[in-house]
Amino acid sequence: MTTTAAREQTALLHRVAAQASLAPSVHNTQPWRFRITPTTFELRANRERRLHVLDPTSRQLLISCGCALFNARVALAAERKSFVVERFPDPNDPDLLARLTVADHRAPWTPLVRLEPAIARRHTNRREFFEREVPEEIQWELSNAAAQENATLVALETREARNTAARLLQEADAAENDNPAYLAELREWTTSIATRRDGVTSRSFPMESREPNDVPIRDFGVKVSGQMSPVRDSDAEQCLMILGTVEDGPYAWLRAGEALQRLWLEATRLDYVAGLITQVIEVKRTRKQLRAELGLPFYPHLLLRIGQAAPNVPTNRRPIEDLVEVVDS
Image 1 (cartoon, one colour):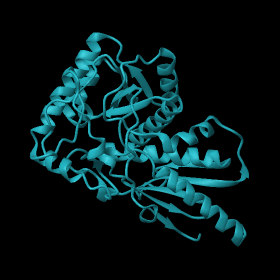
Image 2 (tube, one colour; image 1 turned 135 degrees about the horizontal axis):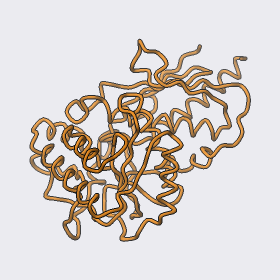
Image 3 (cartoon, rainbow, N blue to C red; image 1 turned 45 degrees about the horizontal axis):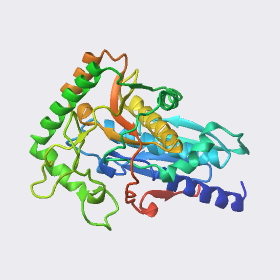
């Protein structure tokens, strides 16, 4: 590769890193680093940004990083670059989550290309959804998107299933809010400072619900003590879906993140938004109960609310210079 070609390729991979950095992450921790050469893009975990109380096993960290990995794949596909993905390529380096090696030849169009415009538009909805049903064909599109990444996305269609999920969510939410360490960690990652580049800003906190019902939403209510504000709930009739994989462990969590981002970008492309509900997964007891009581043939990693809603404020991002290491060869 000539010096000019190497410089151009490095610049391209720097743009890929910028797209990857727009991925969602638990509490907007942005727990990733990127290392690029003229021919490779590496995704690395930043364990210093792990939530030690909420995420002791790094499940949520790896799901977040999987979302960043999928963004990188989409960005390369949009550039018509051929590439090979290696996940956990070095068993002696567990923080090296993925390596994308870029080939010289031009790649054909793939369905990933149409998702690229959605990367910048995608956002997490932590507020109320419009009272509109999500058509079955939209649910099918999202389930199919997850399946393309070897994950499963199913809707909670029956009243019994929704009541079970709601009960376990309430139990998990209560358990977390009884833990002073959890509340302290929550305070650390919430902010009203507009210039802060990570954490969840108060501008995106849930507003008061019109009516209380079944499904608690983490509202980051830290006005006084750091404890959650009184119950903020999700419409029990809205579209609730569970994402999971047939295996459990770090590789599966990374793949679950790729599946999450694929279905999320697909939803964005179709003018739908998503909100995540993870408390029931974060508490070990309720995570096991959710799988057992719903008879799920897979390991659940998160619940999603899908629907349409008013535009939300954009999430602040860390400077790309803090995330990228460029190596000449």
